[in-house]
Length: 529
Ligand code: HEM
Image 1 (cartoon, protein in one colour):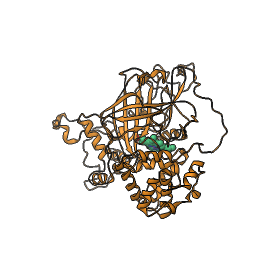
Image 2 (spheres, protein in one colour):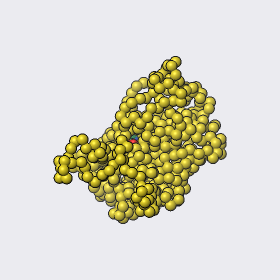
Image 3 (tube, protein in one colour):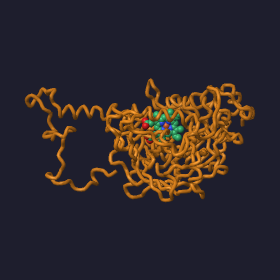
């Protein structure tokens, strides 16, 4: 993204392109609107002025309801043709992975979550890591984050969660700690993610030095129709680097868009960031031997049991030619998969899949998929017609343009044939119900993460929790300290010390929990500290 100053000397007056309006009419005077006499009044047939000003009036589209602040860059994914040391075809028939050296164009948008479009990029927040692969079979979007897990395991809670992260609806006060921890302290599944967000990893030093994860569990399908569960990991070749709160405060005082600037400056200087894509695979069943559910996005899969296996490398080498058309209007979604990749029954994934395209029809418009940045690089042919801002007609090659329906014997489009049969994966039976998944285990992985961190990371986590929780009401502090004790005694003790709350102060708070505790959790609650 080069700025005006670096464009070189302007062309001579004669060579410069002539300004027109969108009707192609030359603009002879762009300084003065048409008026009756030099001092006005203006007239309503003032087409040039009215077009210009009314387009300007509509320049802003709604910002994303979440992840509003972000930056997109473009590049290439190169496949290994293998997954670890096995041929990838054994596990998935997705064509983009099959051949060593095979290249697929990508677009990546990095983002923060809670702030508005012009908010600080140095805020403590998860970072979005959304990748669009323009594959030969159409687009695949992998819409993830930099932390590997999420706050919730059921999509029905997402609007409440996001409201708790946003400014007060009455005063628009941005000091949101009390709201955030009011919600968190009654949502134990979020404790693991909060322990990550308040660790140094909640403040990546740049978009280039952060990991990425698909987070939700997906499936891979091979030629025989066999399915496996899969999780995706992006490992930055630049290494992982984080800031402390003090580092971030200094940067934020100077520049709000620090990560976008860093990313674009590096790419423009030819220092192209790259990430290896690895996967973890698991057989497609419920895995009763695990103490967590493989479809629970608040959990990671232990890498000792489910090792990372490399499938390719992505390099970013181009910045947008125009930020609005290529970054504001880009639209990712978890429903955007290609043959060989599939959904799992992860309850978050299903909810997300509806939410993305729904919001994009509102945010960008019903024809958002016709925009160049969102359209597949392959030919697309649909019978969808009209709607606001229809950008073209999705006619297939040789399609009779009069036939915008299917089936037809008059030269319309035909259905594609499945590469193999459509039935795949385990058979599922069950009653309609509203229930939590049985294996919740909200604390073990949060505690393990604390124990396995380096000393400076633990100190940082404790300091960040104390700082944020000290802005909260006492009952909220107590509930949070109780959860942190449940995760790890030392963590609960140290955060409690910082707030003047002891294990004795919070003992018994399990009675206030909004969800049924497991036997192991009840035992743990009885022995806090
Ligand atoms: C953006 C919904 C969970 C990652 C968005 C947007 C919505 C949304 C409505 C705005 C999209 C747009 O305007 O284009 C949801 C819902 C969730 C959920 C309902 C849970 C049920 C997650 C999770 C992750 C995630 C678990 C990470 C794994 C992202 C990213 C973006 C995004 C990266 C920004 C995409 C971009 O750069 O344009 N989400 N989300 N979301 N979400 Fe989620």
